[in-house]
Length: 155
Image 1 (cartoon, rainbow, N blue to C red):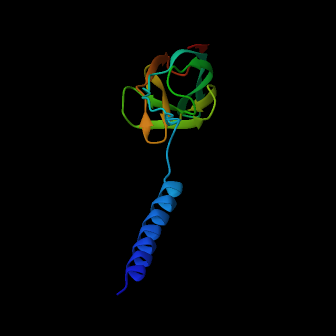
Image 2 (spheres, rainbow, N blue to C red):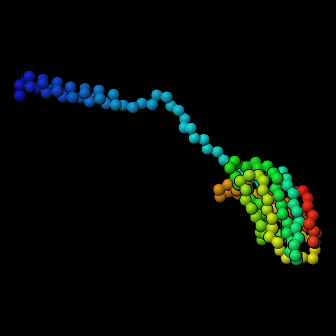
Image 3 (cartoon, rainbow, N blue to C red):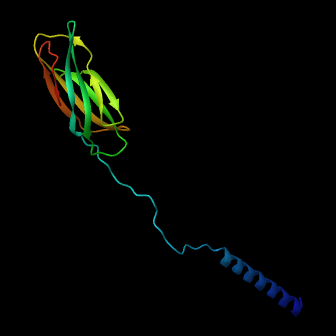
């Protein structure tokens, strides 16, 4: 191998190395202005409704009795987007006598007409917030309807 061949090969290898270094320098990416992500994470708590306003009406039929609740408004301190469940039970039983749901903070619910009893009947209204699979504690109000009464009143 002659001296000129050696010089030519050395220059070719050196040129190839310089070319690779130049291409790598151009292709290198760099972040010059770090920013934070736009996602914020927090928690929310389902709370029982408060300040419930509305009316009730005791109902009687032919050997039957029931009640109707009309909920006008209430305060919900929980997260937005909740729906609401109104439920009626009779004489402290856990058996629902009627329920309804609402996307707003008002609505009505009435019990099914059940067999009349001799004395007064206690009816309990519960109001609960629901959001997806979460539920709040309940707001509760118990009213008493005298036998054969068609009384009305405020919650």
